[in-house]
Structure formats: structure tokens, C-alpha cells
Image (cartoon, rainbow, N blue to C red; front, side, top):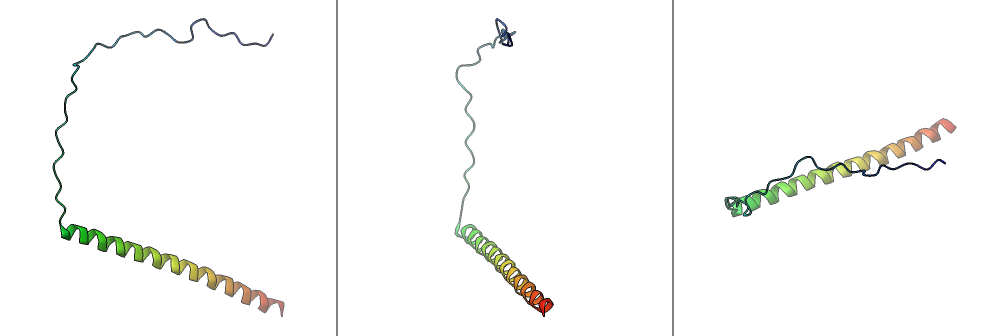
Amino acid sequence: MFLPKYPDNPTPQPTHTHAPTDPAPARRPALPSVSIDQKTVAAVLVGGVVLTALLAAVAVTAISVAVAAVVLRSLLRDHDRR
């Protein structure tokens, strides 16, 4: 009684057809070569070391602030109980 009625052909027929194109695909031009010298490698390594050091400094600062907040909260809670 409550079964759905499905249409006879649920997918419409395509209204257009694709015309065949050139069978051989066009070749893309080769990318220009990039020369990497020792100065570039050194600059990337120094930049990576600096960014890693900054990230470590932020992490250490966040941990120390969290520890200080816990200690201060504990001291203030003990002070209010007296």
C-alpha cells in the first residue's frame, strides 16, 4: 500500500553526443629546470631550524604558563581556606 512507484526510465537520455577529437593528445612543454645550489639548501635548513626553535619556544612558554596558573590557583585556594 505504501510502496513507492519508480519511473520506468529514471535516467534521461543524453541530448547531445560528443564528437571525437584529435586522437593524439597535445604534449605539454617540459618544465624549466630549477638549479639548487648549496646556498639555497643552507638557507632552507637555517629557516627550518629557526622555525623549529620558535615553535619549541612557544610550546615551552605555554607549558610554563599552564604550570604557573595551576600553582597560583592552588596557592590561592589554600589561602582562602585558612
